[in-house]
Length: 98
Image 1 (cartoon, rainbow, N blue to C red):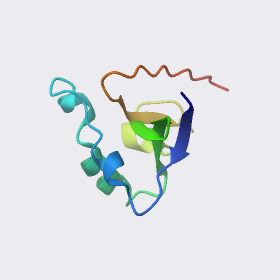
Image 2 (spheres, rainbow, N blue to C red):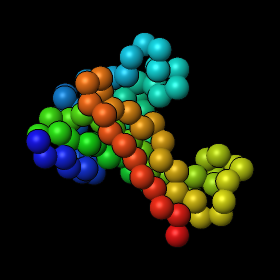
Image 3 (cartoon, rainbow, N blue to C red):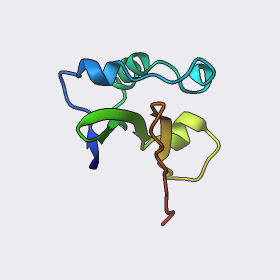
């Protein structure tokens, strides 16, 4: 099965808006459609979708203004925010600081 990460395009697919985490994780991640709508007003936040075999299986934001958003992080840090993958799929993230 192929894995692809693509920047969110408009119009936004219903399959992407339907992505959701378990009820237990909701307080930590939030509702994808709400996250997308709120992030559209911030040019330093980009929305990304993880596809498995052409089906949306995950979502995350890259926040290039993370220092401003968080207030207590390294200068010029990029934040990986609102990361989720749907049940049944395991996605591992590896980040390298440069």
